[in-house]
Image 1 (cartoon, rainbow, N blue to C red):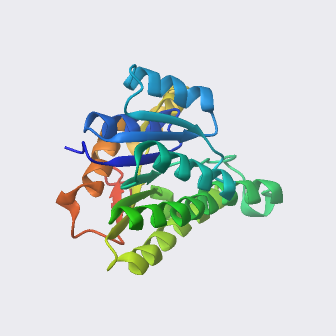
Image 2 (cartoon, rainbow, N blue to C red):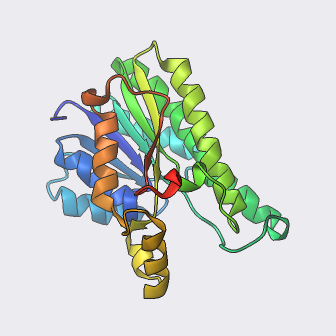
Amino acid sequence: MWDDKVAFVTGAATGLGESIAEGLFRRGARVALVDVDLDGVRQVAARLDPAKKRTLALQADVADAAAVEAAVQQTVECFGALHLAVNNAGITGDHNVPLAETHLDAWQRILAINLSGIFHAMKYEIPAMLAAGGGAIVNMSSGAGAVGQAGIAPYSATKHGIVGLTRAAALDYATKGIRINAIGPGYIETPEMAKLPESTRAEFAAAHPLGRLGTRREIADMIAFLLSDEASFLTGGFHMADGGLTAR
């Protein structure tokens, strides 16, 4: 499907990012797996591609613009172009902390990774895509980017900000061959979710009208669709994948 495409995925060492990278690789793309955890992305790359022909493991903290720029450059140098990107890296921060009790350094850290990180990624991905003749980007927001959520104000603020950033960028490049969308997952079955008490997992599952947690494969497949030519009329959208969580 994508034998001629090069993809760039941040936060690819585990969780959703790992599954997203795997989904793009399985569809034939050459994939740069990017994460602050270099050993983690190396392990994922080795599992997907033992021959090391279609994957590239790169270390970058998305809060560091220079590191992101270097990762994009390395991707283009290795594979010759960049066509697809999924800007997935992010953190939640502490839970159940009212806004006025949020430490300033916690606010700055979440802002730097979740929102500035996606700005940094697009700033360097877009010129590479323009040089390749166009491309498509999906930015990872959240159900918390559509509604407020008590106790995680910094996270929710950044996820709302990602939607605005996505829409503005989509308008900037709509006539230049680059489509940019955001996705808003609900509670997803990930390794981190598996560490939570069963009662908490059950509470999260019940929050979805569908009555269950989402799977990583479901999110990865939706992202692959948004990146594909089948979604050629979709740009500037915020696409919910939340089991009906925000429909109430």
